[in-house]
Amino acid sequence: MGQPQYCLTKIQSSYSQFSKTEQKIADYILQSPENMVHKTIDQVAAELDVAISTVFRFSKRLGFKGYQAMKIALASELSAAVKEIVEEKITENDNEQAITEKLFNSNIRMFKETIQVMDFSSLKKAVDVILKSEKVEFYGTGSSAIVALDAHHKFIGSGISTAAYTDSYLQLKSASQLTEKDTAILISHSGKDEELIRVLEAAKKQGAVTIGITNFSQSPLSQKADYVLYTASNQVDVRSDDTFSKIIQLSLIDALYVNVMSSQKSFLKNSINKLKGYWGK
Image (tube, rainbow, N blue to C red):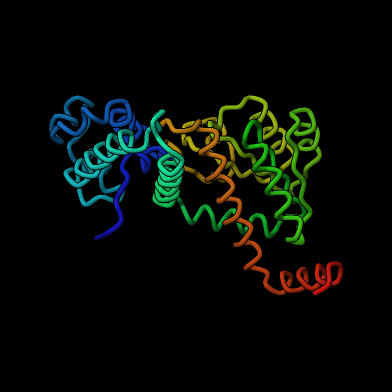
């Protein structure tokens, strides 16, 4: 059996790349997916005042064979979501095993959904940008601040000058000192934090390349960053979105770091040898 196809997460992650007409169809689906399941392609086209062929091409754009295949995937996704809410909602009667299993299962689904919406060409571009940078700085607010600090700790051993800032004043001050040889990586679940957007704008003004990590394709961070890596954390209400997003953001940083290090194997070997010199074998 093949991997499940996620219609809603694909639409959310690709939204900024759609044409205005495609965004019109995407909005129609996102606003009422349950309603969409019961509509024929003719009805959708008529309600949106677009050609039937336009709706069909939108289905193909998402990677489906056609409108019917997209509708089946959407129905399956909605059905699975309802089932997961029933199965994974923590209750006061749950024991330690039940709670732990529900949390772990939620994390597993979150990783699978992120893989489904991942644009690996954007990931490669981000790795290439980092490798060419003289300095990489990480910025995050809220729970994403922890992710920025973790990224800094990892990339210290990459041979690239790196730093992380969580205070909004220091973030803005540091971003204003970047150059066209540097990269700013901004991390935000919502992508709407106004202070972080000011940091992004300051970095861009200095000519630095900007990479956003966020969950929402329609956010200011997605619209303004040079490159965007999307996460998926639309989970059941077991924990807050911030907690879920932090877990997936940490893993995405791991992916960036490992890809960067695997692209410079000789440096990795030297770095390990240097550490051995301090810590012993």
